[in-house]
Image (cartoon, rainbow over the protein chains, first blue to last red):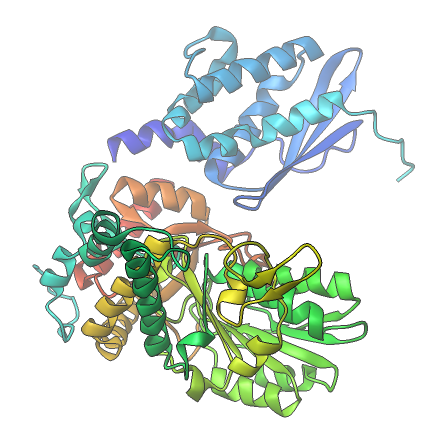
Length: 148
Length: 417
C-alpha cells in the first residue's frame, strides 16, 4: 500500500474529508462549471475578481478524492493572485500532473502533493477538472449583477 | 486452489482450476498481485479455444465470404454459416436465417430502430423502455422518437431495482409499437421477468426487443420460450471476440424489414435504375463481415455450452451470495440493486469514498472492478448516486477472489478513515 500513499497523500485525504472554501461564494462575479462525463463528477468554481486580483475563490461539487482535494487546494493557492499568476499556476499544475515537470517548483507549494497523479493517466482528468473550470471562469464575462 | 476458512463449502460442477487454466490471462499479475478480474459485465476474458479458432481461420481457411468460387472462399463461407448455426442453437432460435451477425448489442438495437423502427413507428406512436436500460437500449429509441414524432415511455424501477410490472403494463397502450428492455441489468444485475413482460407487450400489440447482452453469459436463453421478437447480444460479454455479436429476429418481421446499411453483400441484383435486396439475414449484413470474429464467437458459445449454463449459473449464484454477504458486512457500504432475481453483478457505494478512488485502490491490489455510471446514467439518478463501484463475476472466478475483494475494500476504508 506504500506507493498508493504516493497518490493518496495525507494532505489529499484531509482536503477530501474537509474541503476548504466549499460552497457558493456570495461575492463571486465569475463562475464556471466543470463536468467530467466519464465519471459524472461536477464542480463549480466561483471567483471574486477585483482590481486585477482574485480576492476570493470557492468551489462546490461532488467528485472523487483527487478532484475534490485538487479543487480545495486550488482555491487556497489562488487567493490574492493576479490573473497572470493564476494562469501561470494552472500551467504549472497541469505540467506537474501530466509530465511531473514542475515537481518541487516553489510556486506550486502544497500542490506538489499531486505529483503522484502522473502515474495514473486515468486520474489526470480528476486532478485537473476544477482547474479547467478555473480557466473557463477566468475567460468568462462578469456575471450579471443580481439583487438577490 | 486454497480457500479461506470462511469461504463457501460448495464447489462448481466443473473443475475450476482446469477452467481457469483455459484462460491464460487469469494467471497474470497486476501491480505485483495476482489478477482478480471482477469486471466481467464490462467484458469477459477469452479461453484459449477462442484464440485458437481465430488463428485457425487465419492459418487454415481465411478468404472473403459469399464472393468467390475458389476453395478458401467456400470454406470461409461455410465456417461463417456454421457459426450462424451455433448462435441459432445457443438461442434455440427456429432458423439460422433469423440470426444476423452484427458488431454487438449496440449495433443490433440500432439496426432494429433504424430498419424496423422507421418502417413501423410514426407520429403519436409510443415506444416503451424501462428505467434500468443501458444507454444502448435508450438512445437509439430516443433518436427514433425524435425523428418520427413518437413518444418514449419509461417504466420506473422500485427501490430494489426491479421494473415495476404494474407500471410497465399500464404504460402499454394501443399506440405502443415496441417494448425494448434488458434481460439482465448491467448496472444492477436485476433479471427481468422477460416472459411475463413480453406477454404483456404482445397482448397490447407491441413488438418486443430484448437486450440480452448481460444475460447470455449467465443463463440459458431460449428465444422461443421468452416470446420476444428480437434478441440481441454481444460476443465479447460471452467470452468471445469484441466486435461481433448477433441479432435474432422473428422471420416474418425480418422478411418485411428494409435494409439499414447498404452496399456489397446485401443485394440481390444492382443496376443504376434499381437494386433488389438479398433475403435475411444477408440483407442486413452489408460489407465484408468480421469473418474470424464469427469463428471466435462460435468457439466461445461452444465452450460455454460444454461447461453447461446451469452449472455456470449455479456457481455464479454462490459467488454472488458470498460477495453480497461479505460486502454487506463492511460498515458504510451500500449495495445498490437488491432485486429478488439477480445475475452475478454487484453494484455498491461506500460512504466517503468515491467509486473512482475505490477503483484505483482496488487495482493496486490486483482487483479489477468497474467504477462509473455503467452507461446507465438514469439508473444512477434513480438511486441518487453519480456513480457506483461494480464487481461482476464469471464462472472462472473463485470464492477466494471474493474474499480478496472484501479485504481490499476494508483496506480502502482504512486508507480513507
